[in-house]
Length: 166
Image (cartoon, rainbow, N blue to C red; front, side):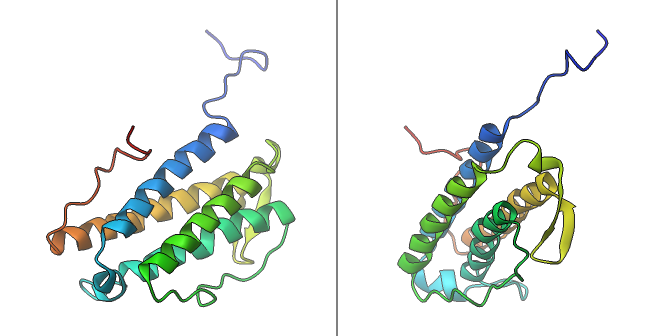
């Protein structure tokens, strides 16, 4: 069958992309929960940052990035603004940023996904590529968290269980 303008099918819609991302965020949250408090902030391998620092990076990108896209603001990336001292504080901020993502992602029109946006004033790409970067970066860093947990003798959550287990 030949594709025409009237028969073009959409692979994913915005709601499905958000659901996919939030599935990853749910799993990353469970990885944070799996760490003992001390190791969350101190344990590293091969000079990599502790997982709390990686989680702060994700917190500093996701919500602020989506909000910047919606508000068409190109503020500089700032990982130093949030400096948690406890796992509880980190998880609270994680949940707050999840709500920011939900609120602002819903405001991105289908047309905006194709528009170029200079994320944090540094990364000039179409909006959809910036959002895919947010997800890819999270998966990458969560993989580091899995390595840390295994090195600590802790079984990480199954990577395919991205949504709450019923």
